[in-house]
Length: 269
Ligand SMILES: C[S@@+](CC[C@H](N)C(=O)[O-])C[C@H]1O[C@@H](n2cnc3c(N)ncnc32)[C@H](O)[C@@H]1O
Image (tube, rainbow, N blue to C red; front, side, top):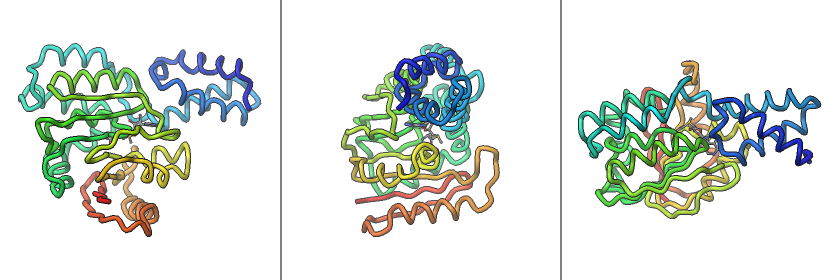
């Protein structure tokens, strides 16, 4: 085990970097403890901890993305998710996170097609949400929907919560480390969008565990159709094989949807 004082020192050192300041502290601690065990040099352990955290989170965020600035802009907009000014704002804000940016070209059809079999949706749990809750207006949600979401960046989650409240949506937004535990809420549909490959960088067995732990009637699971660097070769087939292994033998009903930037599965159980 890493020495506690050394570990706390590492957490402080990692958080000195602007992009690491608002990350879930327990996640920094868990990644840092492993790196301290593996590296003989403290400085090296700080560097590799940051690098791991960058791979699973920071790499998706535009450099210089300031959620305070977005929160100020939002405060001046009409309080309706479908207002044209709010829709424009959402598209611009979603472009700050690589995952939602890739979804913008398919937004008009994605949620309406993949969630069509469920009818109107009354509760959502958006796991490792990124900025996906800003796609609210493009989802087939009931007026009384309750939106739960979690991720590892406090400033991003504050912005997401402000957005949902601004649009009059009841929301429960929290920090989570999915490699440790899944939020316990029971919902109609849980989103696990493009997240399994990201979390597998922390824990190879996480996919199986998460699918078992999520308390939802339906799961919308997706995978990227290309890498962050833009390469697409064989990715769809590889992720489809991987997903099929994860759900093998469970007897769940599964519908498959393929788009230019995303491969999605609607799982009903
Ligand atoms: C590929 S992005 C997907 C974002 C969103 N689901 C979407 O499709 O637009 C992966 C997300 O996982 C989050 N993340 C990384 N590690 C996590 C962890 N241990 N627990 C919860 N979220 C995590 C990142 O911050 C990032 O927002």
